[in-house]
Length: 456
Image (cartoon, rainbow, N blue to C red; front, side, top):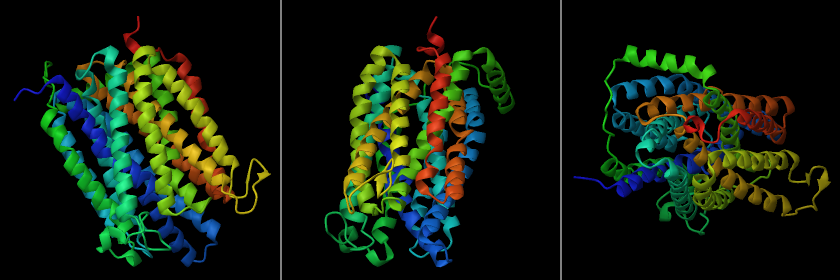
């Protein structure tokens, strides 16, 4: 059966739709705050003071992200080079999709009051590795989908479609499954799972794992039906030859100034952005005292802003190029981090709020919208600029290297947040290192060409 170009693009969009709940539901808004609740209670049971327990929970979560990030960094370019050498990409997407599903499903088993937190971190790490590697191989299909002039629009629309999926999945979780720890009711005022799940065991919130896995399995069907392996025109090579090609690419980086500067810059700003996504829900839980349900509403606001921004700015990307989008998005994210560091429940930059004031909540909701908008646009334009630095036949290798640049220092943001949080005993101060990472990324962008290596 012949698949039209338009249908191939829509099939490719469906990966973003299918995989987005891992970031939206698990990494940020539902599972991460629930894990923080369970871990905080565990550490308080061991005699920690409440603030120290919150810091310990954040540090534990950060350590898990660090381990997963190192694994991804080590394997991404190697697997990419092997895939390009053999011309096989879809088989890897199948493999890592299985990791995604198994890891997500395993989160169901994190019970309230659990002390074996490491099992939940292992399951979460497996799913995260699956998502990240599947993304590498789906991104590598991008050069075969559209022309250079349409690339920004396709990338932005894909992210917008993915965020829309994240919004819908989050709304379903909030209305049907995720219960409040105090009332045992969902946002709709109902018992979780239409009365089929036990709120005392937090089964509604824990269902986020199986829900995410099922969502992925269902919505990857259009991808596997409509997206086919691009025709391989090169000569297949074995593992040794593929790794030799990767070695030559890495050794050439000092001579390819635009690519090298871009990989270094994206390494820092993506690391900082992931840190902001990862610890945003935990910050809201620990500093502002938000419930999982309220954090979920915050997530809906951020995802709606991201969907609109990536769809609109994707057109700007196609017209003006991805680099200006990346620069302005990073500036907005620096401003957001500054506000978060300077604000507590009681004051912002030393200016006190009235007792019980809702102003800090409103400010953080606004921050959520801006994080979604700027975070979405910087990611969408980043993969466009990466396409401008590679060719279709070496795209998987290039995106593997891109993943390496995003994960080689993926431990830095969590490690800096962990260290700053542990040293200060304060979750707000723990976010401060992200500002420096964004600034460093902006400096490195000076040497990046707007159209990458396609610019003469």
